[in-house]
Length: 221
Ligand code: GAR
Picture 1 (cartoon, protein in one colour):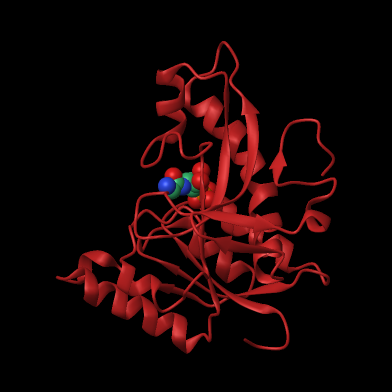
Picture 2: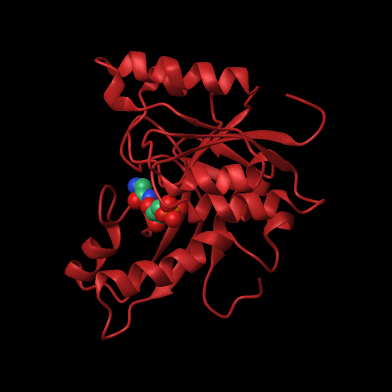
């Protein structure tokens, strides 16, 4: 672990609005992390533009170019190692990572997911929430394990489901909260204010006063 700011490798597949939230947070002097590199498995991902605009190393590791998953992950690891990445943040990264990959970053891989886990893991979480008729949706930042969106939960934010919501409207309202939640959770994780405790996490009560572990509309930011 370096003495300075924690070095993040952000993995993306798409628009990268959560990457942008992390880049913006890292631009603040008091934020305890920096984005060392951004890696996309999708060559056309807009997230790559965001990284370049912020002056951050941006690389493509296209999963389609590899026959075996282990080779794809090996190439991914090579980039992360070269950029001296300490923490891996998944930000709309739409591939599952193997236990073997995760073992190279023990307890240091985070993900953001657009539901209140353990409800609605996997694809199209806001659509799943609407179809199930829940009245409160939200987002979750969690440690990544080898399952699908199943690792220990670090922080969550709640978002009301409104009567006229369609998938797009609900997903957009959740995304606003994601952009607040991910930097907060990264700060907790890299400063050791949250740690894994079996299937759960332990969060330093002092660190969360007034802000999270559960953020909900109307709570102070
Ligand atoms: C976000 O809503 C993120 O939570 C979700 O994809 C979107 C990416 O948006 N991730 C997943 O569903 C992973 N299971 P972004 O590219 O604008 O950050």
